Amino acid sequence: MFNLIKNENMKIYRRPRTWVMFGILIIIILLMSILLHVYELDNWGWVSPLQQYAEAQGLIYYENTFWSNAYQVAGLMSLVSIFTIVIAGDIVAAEFSWGTIKLLLIRPFHRSKVLLSKFIACIIFALFMLTTLFILSILINGILKGFDGFSASFLYMADNGEVVERSMMLQMLIYFALSFGELLMITSIGFMIGTIFRSSAMAIGISMFIMFTGSIISFFLLRYDWGKYSIFPNLELTQYRGGAALISNELSLGFSLAVLAVYFVVFNVLSWYIFSKRDVALS
Amino acid sequence: MTVETTAVLKNVSKQVGNRKIIDGLDLSVQKGEILGLLGPNGAGKTTTIRMMVGLISITEGDVSIHGKSITKQFEQAIQHVGAIVENPEMYKFLTGYQNLIHYARMSHGITKERINEVIQLVGLQNRIHDKVKKYSLGMRQRLGVAQALLHQPSLLILDEPTNGLDPAGIRELRDYLRQLVEKKGLSVIVSSHLLSEMELMCDRVAIIQEGKLIDVRHIKTNESVQQYIVEVDDVEKAKQAIEQLEQEMNLEMRKEHIVIDMEKEHVPAVVQTLVQHHIDIYSIIPATKTLEDQFLEVTGGKEIV
Ligand SMILES: Nc1ncnc2c1ncn2[C@@H]1O[C@H](COP(=O)(O)OP(=O)(O)OP(=O)(O)O)[C@@H](O)[C@H]1O
Ligand SMILES: [Mg+2]
Image (cartoon, rainbow over all chains, first blue to last red):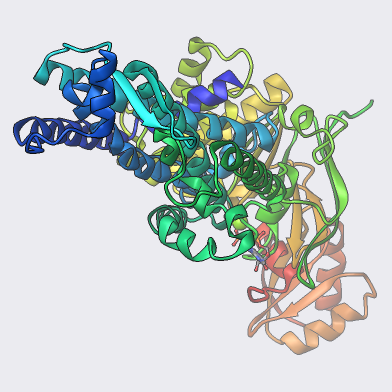
């Protein structure tokens, strides 16, 4: 099994396009950080209530430190999603279009193991990219602005009106974990479509469509009672990074996680079933 | 003497929609033999091979390799098999060597030495570190053979392995397969369009048409029928005369000669009859019927279905 994952990794990282993606990500992180640093927003002396609260408590508020920009640059997570879709949608479909699937499946491994190794390789890729994003956004913004205020606090207003305080480092980790959860779902979607249709273009196209139109579709679906059980309003887990959901007060992190868990199982069981049963080369 | 059987196809059928692409195939491969699958385009050779290696499901019947069912005990059955199915597609963005590493990782105990040995064997040592996208068809075919041999399988299944190889390459492959079979007791199944090639390469040839097994012939035991081309002055009269012999022989009339399928022993009798009937004989030329002729005869030279 370990060897299968090694093989999948070789097939991902020996392709130039993978490094082009990393290159693009790094360049955009750099550009965004520099732009944010140079054109710092001038809020004309306006102080937000949370900031007033922080000052009253004697806390370092994160918006006054490099964390502010780092937190914004970490929002490039959507770029990581796009690249993850490309990898996940392609990893099964490409073997079919290359014809290499035939040689891959005549080895002493059940198809489910081959599929699992591909899924794991996608997850590793997603983690790798996400880690790159978070580390670089902290590092570059820290270097630009200085690491003063490393122990700054993140504050948000909870549902009951109380102000919650946590360290910015922890907040970044939470953001990272939520992003990862989102990537896990996106990977499953791309993976499933790629497995069913054996077409990379279709898998990448459909997944991106879901990703980009997700919030618009959500607004329509949430008019109905059952709408909140659809995948769209729940997919964007990072909306919970500042406490409650932005899109509807009926949703909560726990609810979204439960709904997504069900979709996760359904998508992957479907991929597995179709991949295991499929006649290779006879449609 | 007991013959060890490597693989058995038992009443294997494949149905797609209402069409039976493969219909009740019974076939077995012995240890140490090269079995050819011969059939016109669309006969079902590739489909048969796909079922043997578990790439497609089997509608009816079963394939077992060393007694293990390919459907029920896939991992145990397939570990003995090395195969090329249709074109030898490889990862083009990897080098030949990386491709082999990829497949080596999927079997147990393949050393670097073994990989190098196989590379030498297929003669790719000079180009093995080039990307596969720079390979010619023949080079990819060689790499395909290399990946099939890597884990020292006891059953080698090659779908049109000579496709793309130059004459020297074909010759090398043939010699190498023969060596493997004789020294290591491998069983080999090859399919090919090159009929003459099959004659040189195989011990037995299974002829498949429209998904059915039509005939299995031994090559080496020389079952090939003798044929004589007799040049006479009056073809029609000669035919009547020979038919009076009441021997079982196939006659074919041409413009100035008559083609007779018969054993050597019957030649004097035929000559005598012809002389008795005052038919002038200009020449008698013996000709061995090639497998190609037999093949066309059996399949009736039909068009592709
Ligand atoms: N995807 C498919 N769906 C339905 N029928 C198919 C499919 N692929 C092949 N066939 C049919 O199966 C039959 C056997 O095809 P197969 O590829 O096994 O022939 P073959 O003997 O390998 O031919 P060739 O010599 O051209 O390689 C053909 O009649 C073909 O039309
Ligand atoms: Mg074929």
